[in-house]
Length: 124
Image 1 (cartoon, rainbow, N blue to C red):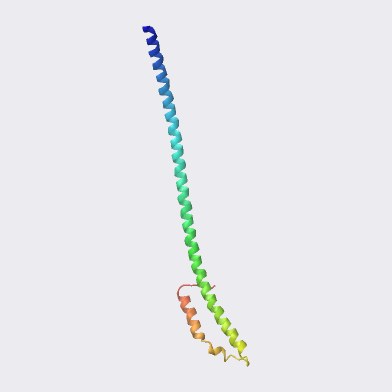
Image 2 (image 1 turned 30 degrees about the vertical axis):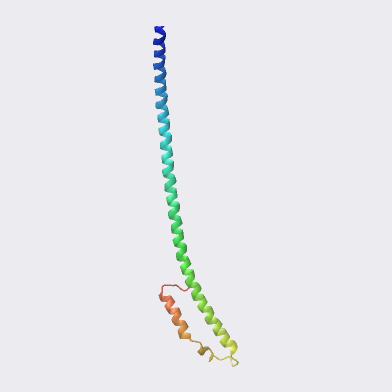
């Protein structure tokens, strides 16, 4: 029975060699898959950072635009108030003269507009 053990040990060695070769192939294949995955993750993170940066830039742009529009609203509201007062003064006078317009404090209104202009707002 001794010869059978030798055959068994030889065939076991051959099987072990095949297993080692298969494990090497599996390791290389695994390494390739891991490398590809790592590269994909890097690309994904770069894209994510780029999208985040673009979103922040857009938010800042919209904030600036919003501030300008708020200033424009203030200016147009003052202008509307002035024109309403002018209209009411003109409609209320029977003589249709400019004497009632002088009752409106134009200097104060113009001073308000000039301080708004000095703050860096642009008249549209």
